[in-house]
Amino acid sequence: SEKGRFSYGFASCAGKRASMEDFYETRVDDVDGETVGLFGVFDGHGGARAAEYVKKHLFSNLIKHPKFMTDTKAAIAETFNHTDSEFLKADSSHTRDAGSTASTAILVGGRLVVANVGDSRAVVSKGGKAIAVSRDHKPDQTDERQRIEEAGGFVMWAGTWRVGGVLAVSRAFGDKLLKQYVVADPEIKEEVVDSSLEFLILASDGLWDVVTNDEAVAMVKPVEDPEQAAKGLLQEASQRGSADNITVVIVRFLDGTTTSAGDGPSEEVAKDQSEEVAKDQSS
Image (cartoon, rainbow, N blue to C red; front, side):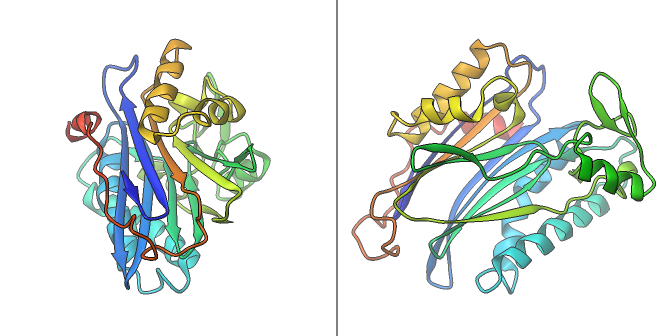
């Protein structure tokens, strides 16, 4: 799909897993007369409930936030936590915990704002170089471990480092039994969208477990159509034996990015021919 200053595509598959717990969202909205792009990858654990809820509500809540256009970072931080507590309320009848990562990118006012919780990663190609614009929230990171221990939790090895010996991410939506340690506070980074910013890759760890940031950027670079590029990464991760669900969203920043949307004739959205990858979202 194309909209003014950017085009985007996505690909998603269950991979070797019996169930699909990855979700993604791509939407282009008009907010206060400005074109805004919202993109997200949500990797669920303990079932699909949390990931599906976050996909459905996070961006709707965000664009309704009164500060969305004026103080986007504050709006994002508040909306992540608000959406998390709303999910926990809605999910309170379930005895088994469900949770989700969120790797999100908001295109607003010539800026790319990336907000992340968990280990789905955001990587940009800038001036030809791969740059991670999010940090994987893992319990063995010194500052994350310290935060968890100061809150009264613990981190232990059980096949990998886990919060309470259970969860391999240190921040997530949901996970009510671990909530005082596993927070939904996003880390937020901002990039100016200029001619050096080529494209963005958002993906679940099903990709990043087997493909490095540099490799992913090198594979996407020659492929102009973002959906083809996303499918290519999916195939590569599968061939390399990724054991997880794999989801990839790619946003390409078009040349002449400094002009604001609405200046040119490229306003209409060119719909993707292949929506078939979306059908396993409804499961």
